[in-house]
Length: 289
Image 1 (cartoon, rainbow, N blue to C red):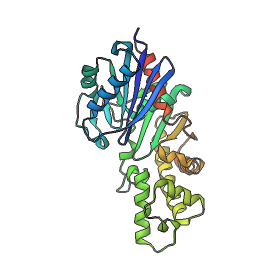
Image 2: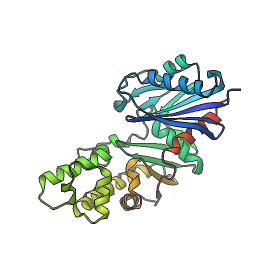
Image 3: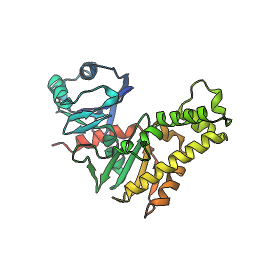
Image 4: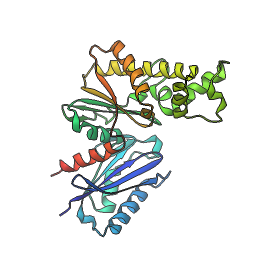
């Protein structure tokens, strides 16, 4: 009986694999995502793990792949960070490994996992980029082109949230400010600082870091307030690397959200983090005939 399955979270930097049976993870591992030949890498990793576990490809019901890009019906339309052209990603991989392959946007996969506790939610990931997944009445909403939730690309005031509020965007915003102002900041003592460093210094009292964080994520909260007024989720969940800033980030976003939203919606920091993708894959496999 084909009772095993793979979960694959394919990111621009690393790829996370899990093998599970029912709701139990058997093994998990991470590899560096190559700049090219990604399908070759997946084929090699999957076949090697099947052999290592003394199993056969026919023991597996499915491989569920979350990709950081626009995906519709298994077709990857745009995946800039993965250097992937438009292709039938799922079809090609399925032909190579002989196991059913299900491909969807990585944040949508995570949203399915987060939705085990909610019927209506909006998952927002803030990391290298910004993405979102929308679940309404327990159903994932992908949109006509598979691009529902691409809020990071919305252009406001000649810039996008991804350019300002992502980890890379925040670092650039602070660097630009420091170059154009003489105001003291402890961040000037760093040769190269990260988004994590910016939040750490803000919590230690750095006024420049605090000012830019407050302005950036208050505006981002207002954007979420406008967007979410259209579909009234039960909860907004913040995930991704920047979400490790915790309550400070959540509170600023919540304040911006409350200023414009007609109805208060609770904003939470994800407790599942990377586990959400695996739970999403489990839910998808559970629903297969």
